[in-house]
Amino acid sequence: MDLGISGRKALVNGGSAGLGKGSAKALAAEGVELYISARGEERLEAAAEEIRRGTGATVIPIVADHSCAAGRDKILSICPDPDILVGTCSPAPFTPDFREVTVAAWEEHLAIGLISPIEFIRATIDGMCDRGFGRIVNISTAASKFPAEIRTLSGPPRAALSNYTVGIAKAVAKHNVTINNLLPGMHHTATAKERFNAMAQEQGSTYEQVVQDWIDEWEIPSNRFGDIDEFGAICALFCSNQASYIVGQSLVVDGGVTNATF
Ligand SMILES: NC(=O)c1ccc[n+]([C@@H]2O[C@H](COP(=O)([O-])OP(=O)(O)OC[C@H]3O[C@@H](n4cnc5c(N)ncnc54)[C@H](OP(=O)(O)O)[C@@H]3O)[C@@H](O)[C@H]2O)c1
Image 1 (cartoon, rainbow, N blue to C red):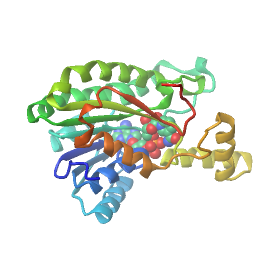
Image 2: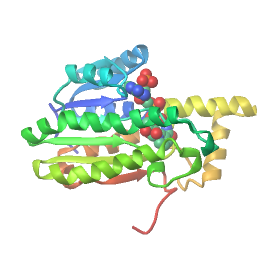
Image 3: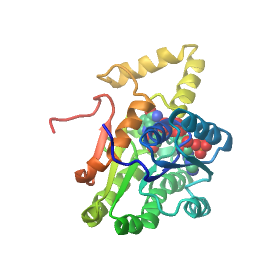
Image 4: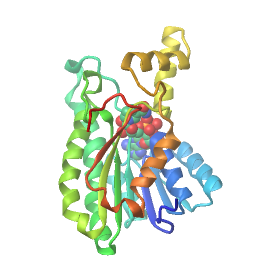
């Protein structure tokens, strides 16, 4: 299906790895002009080149930390008027004891998980409204809807983000500007690979076995982790022309771990 976004300008903050990269690739395959930002230059340049080669799209990499004002200013000076805005970051560290979460840790994760997407939305949404087209997708976390102690730093900032975005989505929908949140569960991303490889080493096990143990413990009905390309395709669908009537939703993508009748 043609998603109707060829020629649109897309900005993916956190696009050099993981779910952001999967989303960037899927958008590039639809013919957007792609801007991807991340802090690490080497991985960012490599991702940009891989996406260019794989899709033929124009890909502009921007080295910046989008959790701070200076980083956001740099990104927005290079791409001030995206039609499509996707935001993501790395997963917060696990928090096995909520008592150990410090104010500094809260400030760091509120800056990247809440303030950053809010500031990008504020900076770009009026242009989208004026042009009569805008798609904003926040790659958030299932932990925002289904809390767990181990996700204390991950869920709360993004629960606040969902609250904010659902509220303001109603104000801009009449301009064909949509804001939605994707709430991933476990996926084979860069950080997941790093984290589960470290656990495997600690336990004298393998990546595959540690992932399977996690799947069993958390009872993932799909009996696997998701992959970044299937996630990217869903993100691109939410950014499509056809998705204009999906407004202020928060969709969990977790292989069926957390669900209810509706
Ligand atoms: N992976 C999972 O299984 C899983 C499960 C539940 C929820 N999630 C959620 O899904 C989202 C993506 O996770 P992921 O696993 O795909 O992450 P990832 O593999 O670590 O990729 C994160 C991307 O964001 C960039 N990034 C991180 N911090 C940044 C910053 N301050 N400024 C600019 N770019 C930054 C990273 O590049 P640099 O490091 O070079 O900046 C990288 O390109 C997160 O919100 C996470 O909480 C993931």
